[in-house]
Image (cartoon, rainbow, N blue to C red; front, side):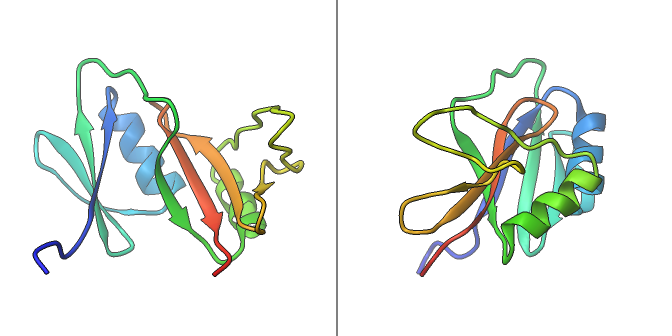
Length: 126
């Protein structure tokens, strides 16, 4: 197959805040700043945080990571300064930590990076 490894992309207007967030808060390994983007090793997936003068976040989740335990991951990331979203939607009840259990038992929680991009962690029932 021609498509082998996925590369993730996200945009930032503040490279220093993004470097701290993706490196320190999320725990990804900083690889380099190539002038156009900050490059991270996100546990085997390349994540390019593209530098821009202006950026308007899109509606919806742009990046997400599967985890073994959503609540444990929320606690760990919260201890590193990540704030989880509480959307307050009547059709999407979240628990006190911000996790939503979808019909079918998938679990999802959302948070934002310093540029307002919506990211998620999730556990999917097979």
